[in-house]
Amino acid sequence: MTFDRAEVLKRIDSVCGTIEQYASWAEQHCRLHDAAFQALIDAQVPRLFLPSSLGGLEVDPVTCALACEKLAVADTAAAWHVMVFNAARLMAAQWPQALVEQLWADDPDTLVAASGHTPLQAVPRDGGYVISGRQRFVSGCDHATWLLSPVLIDTTPAMAVMPLAECSIEQNWDTLGMRGSGSSDVLVEELTVPELQVVIPNSQAGTNALYQGTLYRCPSRIVFATYVPVALSLAARSCHLVAAMVGDKTPGGSAGKLRERTIAQMHFGKALAVYRSARLLFFQGLEQTWARAELGDDAGDIDRADLYLAGTHAVQASAEAVRHGADIAATTMVTKGETLERIGRDMETLRHHGFVNESRYASVAQVHWGAELDYPQLLR
Image (tube, rainbow, N blue to C red; front, side, top):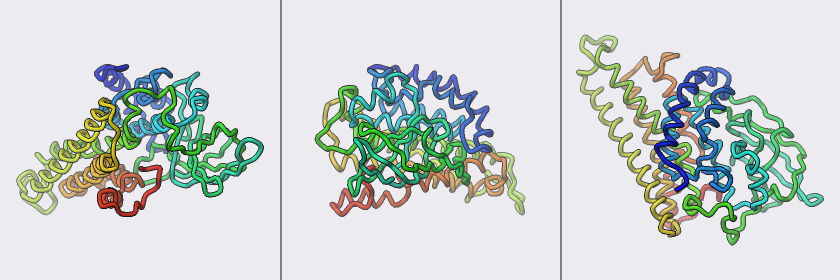
């Protein structure tokens, strides 16, 4: 073990005050404040899934998920940056060692912002590639040094790392929720990158020498530990706030207290049940994945699908729990400036994320049934 869970979470606690202080600024400006971004670095969030050989922590997925949950209480957009920082670091296990060292050997906290929404076009030229296209939903791009994007070389899929200073950020992230994530589009126009920075997947390649720890024997879906807990945190906060408000609340047109109404009690019980059961399933999936990796056992197709199921269900069940809370809170849930209103907006945005939206239940069934898969290789 190269980390101590209690110490990791203590560092997270130490910066939550700063992050919460700038949460409203992030909502208004559609990106993290520089001070909040620096707080994440101070808490070593960029190093959670980075190899210890590069100054990383190599935490287990449960520790990562707990850290993400804590940050989400302070600001969901800041917690989203657990994924923003660590997704590329996890994917880099299959990259050439020289590329990994180029990105992080001198600065373990360098941000490589990634999006898998739309493959760009890469044309071979003079020992490298010329890349063009628009990549959407590039969370954290305002603070990043590099852009990671899927590309197509003719019809061959690959991943490319491009300097963001030579791309154009279009400040068009203006959404219902998760506004502070800064997930704007990035435009790439005839950008030449060296061959080293374009990685063509090779199933025989294995992990590079920097990625030899237990963490990197886990399937790629442990990336769920970096962002699914944001949804779980929203559901937990919704339940807490609703429970706190019902004592003195009298619904309009009613003479009785809200806490005495059976329909409200039913919605709250359902909210607790779906949230708690989904959280248990999710953390159980992470724990089982880690235990398997510690034994040196490879995850099978069903194992990976079941982890996918746990992550998808955690998000969708969290959204259901928040909706139950809305049925209790009524106008409080839609009054601008109320915490519950922000929770509802963020949750509605998260539940439509392409990797964990409701259609991914079907993707899990496809694996169990041996049916044709309808989701991209990046998610498998």
